[in-house]
Amino acid sequence: MKLRQIFRWQFYKYYYHKIRREKPLDYIFFDAKVFLMLLAIFLVGLFTLFPYSLKLEIPTIQSQIYILESILRIVSIFIGISFSFIILSFNIFYKYFGRYAFLDFFKIRSAKVCLTLLVTTILLLIYTISFLKETSNPIAYTNFLFIFSIVLSVVSFFSIFPFFIKLLRNSQNRKHISKLFDKIGGEDYVINNFLSRVKGDKASFYHKDPINLINEIGLSSIKEFDNNTFELINEKILSFFKDSVSEQLEKDEHIDLIGLYHNFMDLLSDFYELSLKERNEKFSKTIVNTRFSIEYEVLENSDNKIFSEFNDFKDEYRHWQLNFDVEKFFKKAVQYNEDEICELLINNYISFAGKSIVKLYPKGLEYSKNKHFEVIFGLGATFEPLKMFAKLADILFANERYSLGHLVFNAFQSMEYKIFELNTTSNTKCVIFSVLHNYKRDIYERYLDSPNSDYIGYADFPFKNGAHIREKVKCNSIYLGLLEIVDLLFSKNKLNNVVLNIVKAEMFLMAGKKDFNNILLDRTIEKLKKLSKQISKNDSDYKKDLYLKLEKYLSYIQESLKANKAPKELIEKVEKTLNTFNHNERFQKELDKKGFVSDERIT
Image (cartoon, rainbow, N blue to C red; front, side, top):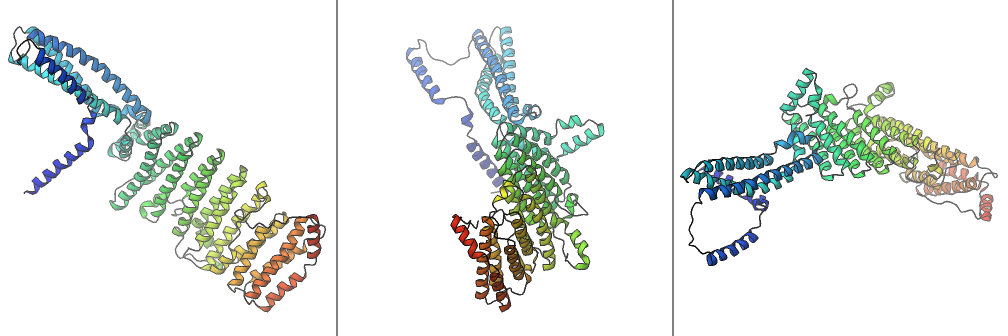
């Protein structure tokens, strides 16, 4: 068997199975069972009751004219019905695809075929009837016209409903959205855009611009809560951008990626604002996820020369556009009291920032005292997420949304873990930790002025992991920052068991690792001693209870140091500090007498 014949058989086989899958008989608006039943009744009557002999022959001229005139009237009625169907299909098309209906609907083949069949049938019937009236005797040509008119009328009748059904289905088929995306960046798109700029007639291009049409369709789908259309648009935005990036990288084709990027960002921004106004949380979340997915694609290829247009500062990509969009999205979400959207934005930015600070860290950048300012300047991309989290906190606090403050605190803690992954020296990491602590402290000081800070819970306290960081990079700044915050909380009467328990846990970790040769243990002991000295017999019950907790936790620390065989001098220092607690028995009796219930929560 020849190769050509093999391919021919495979071709026929493919279309055979394709037609079977399409089930064309389902489109025929005709019930064969009912027709066969009525036909059977007619045939029974015909063969039993017909008074003349049965024979098949062409009717007389007068009968032909009568039959064709009757068919002509019926077909004319179908013309009216077809226009009604077309108008209905157009309205459905316009509902789903807006102004795109005026550009694409009348190109649909189903509508053209339907009208062509009906108009052609009417013209043939008119001609046939006219010719028959001019002819007195039947001839071969009149018989041909009569039979052909009958056949075409039957074909038109049985074809019109399948085409109508296909037209209606096509009117709401989401494949039109894919067609719009395919036009972006195409030859016609580029030429029309160029000509509109040359002629100074941007309005003519605006009405045909697929980006604007997609924008209108997307906004309409949000208003109509059309989930399928909106999901498809978001999927196509992401997939189209990824495919464009792949074509640029693999096929070396010239594609205006930065223009496409900004066009899609404008689309998502418009969609997001309307979805918030319509209180459609699901759509808003989809938009946020799509926005970050596109930026991940840019981040992944940011070191490629092709993506140099995405650089923000001194040939560096710092994802400023993402920062602008997230800040704008976050403000809107806070304005509309969409707490879940706020949380999604922060969590997505945490994930993105975690990858960006590792990906964008300058190779070979290491801290030294004589290069302090040079290194700080070079760490600009690393500090971008910290600045962003500070902005988000400002937005929350400016709108008195303190209940969401823990989201920002979690973000800073997540960044602490990501700093460990940087390929640089411990000194450089320590500098980054110090800068991070300064951002975190400034935000926390503002948070402490809010009503939500009356009780400091574990999730609301971001100054943890100091001992762990000390163990990994020999950096004391985070733990010393913890002691600094303990002072601040004490001055505001907000120091509680949760915070003291965190201090105790940090001390236990250092003692367990036998890390005794550092100033942190000594500083902690001094800090607890200093706090106890500031509590007098005239203070509130809260302060007296705090005094007892300080002594209790110091004794825990002493036991831990002994168990881990700490230096004798350090154990003695704790013991001397404990001996300075002279009011413990008195305070305990006073609190017991009043029935004071101590807050022993640790979360």
